[in-house]
Image (cartoon, rainbow, N blue to C red; front, side, top):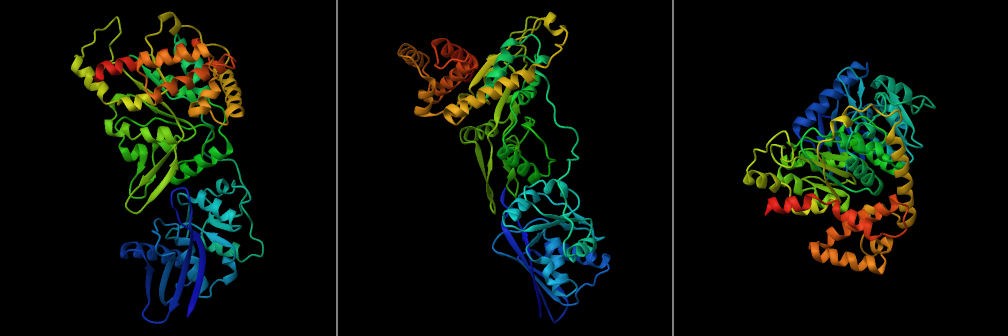
Length: 502
């Protein structure tokens, strides 16, 4: 009887639970059985491993082979278990010493020629293995990025035979972290490219400084998409914790590593699963991929109403729980939402050179797709019109305005964190009232405004948060009536949506 145990890890959202590949060789008719896997998956694994071992000039064990991926109750998916099972077979058949598996974990898919291929989601596995004090055996592809995990020990090889040779050395060579081959860093448009739209530029700086969600309404071709793509360039560098979460999310879905705030712009035909996360594996969706960055929803009214309503809970909590029959995972989703839409289906409302062709019923149906509770969760609502022609043809400024705005935003955000341990957009309850420092006259004025405008509690609090950011931009310790008036005016779409939605 021959027995071997190889450590590896599975995938459960952003976590990597420990898995032990148990390989048992017994006498009898030759066969290959993986406990807990279907016959199809078992045959596929056997075909890859057998061909890889033979192609590596090693001997396939002529025994009845039983493989158990413990704990058996957890669902196992993917091809990452090929490498640990193959090494377990070589150890159990005494072709490799048992010591090579001591204090090490292995991950990788095997090719028919014996090559080791990279798998999705290995970054979380390497993080967990490093925290457990173990080295990792992986494919040479992508090993330098995995080696960037602090204190990690990565043993990489291009194929199974090379890895066996490395593992039998007293001190195998470790892969060092290197430069990513993903290309140059992502750059975003400079805010100076937005010509003749001072209100839009002011709203972008306000949104960046306080972490507020932004809604832009206006006819097509006036710079809504350009403004949304410029917002990530106004945000300060994300924290190391956020960068690690972004890297884990991107690695889970197979996207390359990127530095800085991410920018995601899903099409309005996206399904609930694409936006919120789903499929049979409960993988993250676009809102999680925009974590610590910007989620841009262009043509907001064209999204299905059921899809948009799914955004309401993540906008409040900053996370999303994706539940499927066999999986339930929670992913971070702390993003800034930028939404854009036309004032009507044809987009010609308010344009002097064109006449709107939409009937009141068509406009009502168009706005009906965007629910009031969703709009109530967006802090800033602005309506913009065509810029003057002379502004469009003005020369581009010599200096970059985004850099200066980003420096101001970074300073303001640091002040907010020192004052209240969170951004203004996250202030709630008594902490919000305390941070605003309303004078008695200002307090009475705002109470009257709430009654007159029939504001909900959530809507009133969001106005206060915007007013607090406006005060920070002016280096004011207290929120004044002027700040509150400006915050109330930055909700112009509310009256339009109320009129058209009935």
